[in-house]
Structures are given as structure tokens and as C-alpha cells.
Length: 70
Image 1: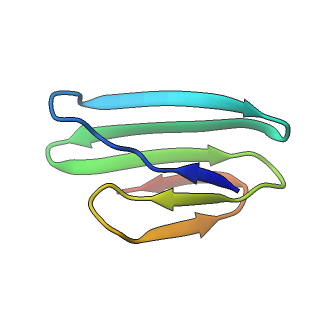
Image 2: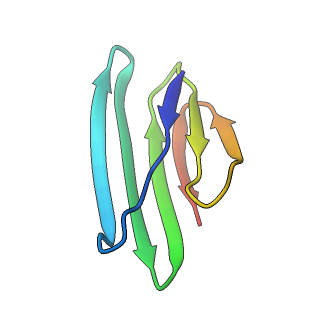
């Protein structure tokens, strides 16, 4: 399982990154837009990811696909 846990830092408005896995590329990008946190995630086929949000102790587990959170 892939763990995605973005940690925005004051003064940095956005970030993006990717990581090559045996199943394909994981891509994550986030942006603080007028106090609204936006997160985009791509999870490769045949994998799952646990996404933990910076403003909450809660998270969500998702399967392969493309996701957008606000």
C-alpha cells in the first residue's frame, strides 16, 4: 500500500511529485488556493493508497485511479 501524507508548509503554495513503483507511476500534487487545500493523486493499476489529509486525523484508502480532493 502506498501512503500519501502531504504536509504543506507556510509560504509554499503548491508542490508536486512522482515516484516510480513496480506497478507504475504514483503522482501527487497539491495547492493552497485561498485557504482551500486541493489535492490531486494518481494511483497506478493493481495498487491501493492511504491518503491522509493535513487538516484532519482522518484519511481514506483508495484503489487505482485518479482522484481530486478539496
